[in-house]
Image (tube, each protein chain N blue to C red):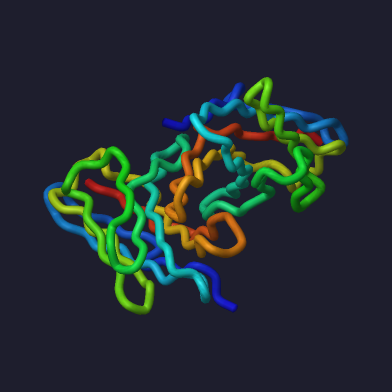
Length: 113
Length: 115
């Protein structure tokens, strides 16, 4: 049974560019949450998607947007990249009515130069 | 709003010694609490969780944590450290008032195990 898969694993972008990160949730999970983890810090909540809608959002600017597809997979889009957006982006899936707790992917390491 | 503090950004223990990682939380409603571990260049793995059942929670790899409401704490312990326990540990809290379970993480504690 595959867990949470994220792609790509690493990428390098230039300031001002746009990036799309992808996440496939664990089988049976229908909720996807995205986190940003800067070096040496704890994960910061970006937003959560459930039934193809953004249900909750953390303290991130509108440059960060997302989408969830009918098969529960999700994308995180970041526009107008800044150097400060360099971080590990983690996707976590869960099933609200089931066993409580997130399953995390291995993350996408984004470097903005 | 809920929050988590972790006392000690770095903790070093000798192999075979007791591991104690501290976590205090703030929550306006009865919380759900978690400990996650992160190895270098990997995602987070759930060690254990408290969801209002038994206050002493046992997790994987010999770890356990005790929920103390009066102290708003959820400290993580392991009787005997192993070299493979060296990693980053995150305490997290959630206020599950709906099915939308936003989880808030603490800043993390880096555990080093000295041979």
